[in-house]
Image (cartoon, rainbow, N blue to C red; front, side):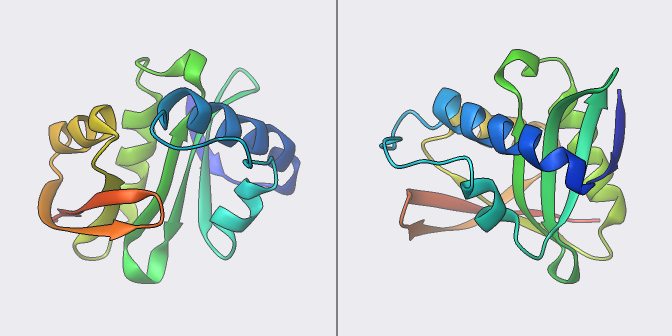
Length: 140
């Protein structure tokens, strides 16, 4: 498994992965209007890292590097629980220049537990169009 920078050739695969992962994990939301192009809007202007295993894209992380903000981390549902998320998260954290931040939906209890297991701490909460979220920090 390797973590590498995004290339334009990744786009169709990551669009599909993004849609499949949201459908598999965001059970509290209505998926009826989700589209493949949502990936493009969600990652616009962000630095994207891709997890790849023998040519198969297994996940991605999208970061706003100037803010040390992890905006997205998604793993192919077939690869969840196999260390892909951990490797992506480590790569993101290694590039932080100061305290990292992310927002994680409270309803996404598996993701909340994942981040906490890897040293992220809840610092506050809020509400978005997708529901309530935790603001989490990773202190270097």
